[in-house]
Amino acid sequence: MELTKEDRTALEKLGHLAGENQIDIAGGKMRRTSSRFCLGVEHGDYNGTELFGVGTDRFIWLAYKPNSTNKVRLFSGNFPNDGVIEYTIGNVPAPKSAAIAETWGRFPYGIDYILKREGFKLTQGIDGVLFANIPGGGMSRSASLCINLILSLFDANGIEVKEQVQIVDLAQAVENDYIGSPCGKLDQTMVLFAREGMGTYYNPKDRSIEYVPIGKGAIDFRIVVLDTGTDRPGLEKATYAVRRRQCEELVGILQKAGFKITCLADVKDEVMYARIMDQFGKSHPDLCDRLNYIYHAQQRFYKMMDAWRAGDVETVGAIFRQDGLGLRDDYKISGPELETMCDIVRTVPGVLGERMLGGGDKGASGALVRAESVEAVKQAVHAAYPRSRPAFANKYAAHVCKVVDGVRLYEGLL
Image (tube, rainbow, N blue to C red):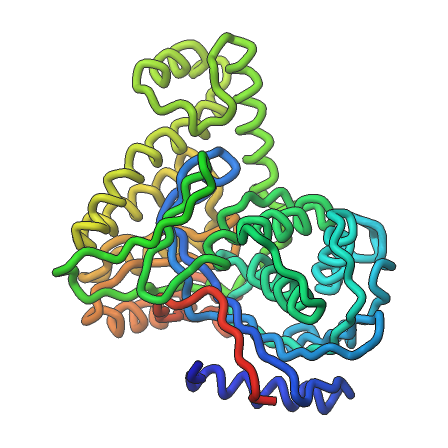
């Protein structure tokens, strides 16, 4: 598989990191995992909705090889102050402990813990170095890391799984059960299954994956990711966790009231929705706001899928924008810097839609933009964002992204 220019740059950097930290990767492999861009439904995974998104070309690269010991040794070029993360297979800190709270090492520790718990017997350690250019919020850096490490450890140990969705479950369990992050399955699914030039449609009812090309005649457009330069805490420390608890609380209330649902995605019928809002809208206004977003986002989802298949990018963008307003006003999961980015790009002709991305509070927003308008978007951001948010004037970025494979493995390079 041919290396891109970015891959070659990353490979060179990984070689330098390995040499500087005495990690032997000579003769090993390099695995690249992507970021993701959700087109719908953001925050729908833990509410049971169908999902649609693409893999994007901001990556984590891991160069690794088996080391014929029972130890794992890893160094991240993004977190050099943590030094080399080293542990013996089967012997890692306890879940959610203070020892792991402030180190990126909580991810490989968590993978070791979850794989052992789920009955996978690792006997072969690896030496590895990592580097990423995924922004720190909104594009699924943690999911990409977990997918990469799990696949690489399985490769080194000759472990194969029959159903790829099991990798999704393992990666989610690392964040849920070991780290304490209440993430759903959206990020892991979109990273693992992403295909170049395709949208990935996931149906939670049967856990099926369908690849959907955009319809013929679609205008030339780009995905632009607008990194606000802010640092977002883990989801366990963010508004995300609050919103998930609120949605689960509302499901419990509705079940006690006799509504036959298991998640908010089950509220699809207009009559049921109206009954709920009439019965609980005044007594539980905040919780009903969460339902309001999920209900209408689901209605928009099917229109968005039809538009994608028809090549109607303008409608896809308009729905993306509507979702953003719902996330801001009903779900209340956005943040001031995220909305500043949206406000700026919304004024640029050729921007089809914009909204916050990912877990919320901080991180990145995103936009769908006509190809000929990309430079105007970048100029608008560079002119207005530093003035509006001077604290992040040297940290923000605008990334123009392509739709790519979620996972690639390169051999014979090191």
